[in-house]
Amino acid sequence: MTEEIIIAGFGGQGVLSMGKILAYSGIMQDKEVSWMPSYGPEMRGGTANVTVILSDDRISSPYLKVYDTAIILNQQSMDKFEETVKHGGILIYDPNGISHHPTRKDIKIYQIKGTKLATEMGNKKIFNMVVLGAFLKIKPIVKHENIIKGLKKSLSERYHHLIPLNIEAITMGMNSVTPINNEQYV
Amino acid sequence: MSELRLMKGNEALAEGAIRAGADAYFGYPITPQSEVIEYLMTERPEKRTGMIVLQAESEIAAINMVYGAASTGKKVMTSSSSPGISLKLEGISYLAGAELPAVIVNVVRGGPGLGTIQPSQADYFQSVKGGGHGDYKLYVLAPASVQEMSDFVEDAFDIAFKYRAPVLILSDGLIGQMMEKVMLKDQKERLTDKEIIKRYDRWAVTGKTNRKRNIITSLDLESEKMEARVHRLMKKYEQMEKEDLRFEKIECDDAEYLFVAYGSSARISQKAVQLARMKGIKAGLLRPITLFPYPKKVLFELANQVKGILSVELNAGQMVEDVRLAVEHKVPVEHFGRTGGIIHTPEEVLEALEQKIIKNGSIRHHKARASSIL
Image (cartoon, chains in turn purple, cyan):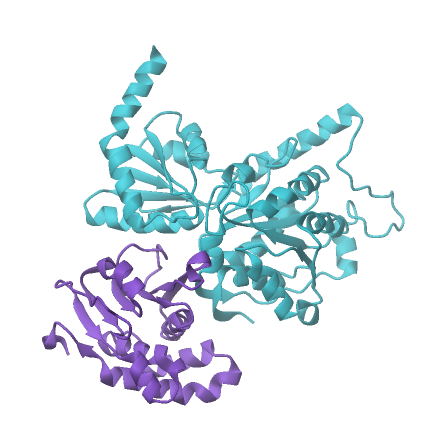
């Protein structure tokens, strides 16, 4: 099993930390992982993105052109990454702020209203965990217990009291993700 | 105790230095390697092992602090990124001349000049062809993973003390900034002053007891003595080639085409090998782990087997010269690489193999050979 993922959005949306929690969860499940951020000038006010790879084998390139899954959280990232999903791959996006919705017919497209749900839950910051939940529902590549372990490992101890809230957000995401063009898959 | 963690390459390197039992780190921040000194400052190794961490006033001060501490037989390290390494080169030449063990780390960014903060491999020439002035070489290790960023610190210290010579770890912004799983080694005890005297009293400045005084210098105004020193250095480099050459062959057994790449480009090329094989192209990868000594013989032998070689580097074509020298024009050798901080994708690398080697390589090669015969 090798899963190649791009997570892309605005700097400050928790893109990098979502990737980190996913990577740590992978480690807890004995997988090889790599996490490669796009950093530097691109990050200031623009898009932030991170490539995360989870695999049963040694990972070759941490830097990729095409992905199994793209998790897209703003319009700029949609413009850049919709075309990078492999044929038959998956695109998950938050419709908040999206003016041009994805149009590809050869991939599976899902929506998760992460911003809206997180706001309703009373904490906008857990938006990224709602989105992570949506991804894990569609691609259950790490077990629930390992996600909890991953959260514990990647959050510093002073935030450990927030773990139940994060789990709640992940569950919310799992229950709320909706297919757009492919009803038969869920 | 050994420990499994998710870390950035730069952090793994810093932790690797503490666990290797380093005595001191002197550095100055610069992107994309600042996490090294940031991590060390946060970790407070002076409390864990007694290791000293100091931010110098400049890169030049840092390398000269390394010279001073290394003179006393201590395990010392410094790190920087390309423009900072250029500043350190005078000191590195002095370390080589004075035959001092030290570890220098370059997390390369794009150049020349201030260039860019994005990854690059454009410091290959600087690293393996001397860099500073005079007849010297550095033993150069090129890590290709976060695990190796951590492991190579101890390996580098071992080599530095085996040969009493400076060792360079040549990384880049990609390996430095990415996170991967890393198994950290057990903590190695730092040597006590007594142990240092016992091991290195014949050369180090440890406080004279009942012996002739040791003088650490790179200056020798008597030409015969200076020439003898140069010969001694050359002997060390020969021994490095015999005993401490490191490389990795990936899918080379039946390869008809070969990528040669180190560090981050080796990782990208490894994926290109997989993509090539999915298309029915039998590609392999030779990854030099040491850039000096260089796996010349292995390349020479592989050239009997493959139809062409592509040197993949994040630069405008540097290592390709050494590949050409090694294969002695037996097969076409071309270069591919993006610059300016752009990272080539595995797909681009494969396309370059198809365009430059499989399609055009043999034609250009025969033309070149024909003209050289004329």
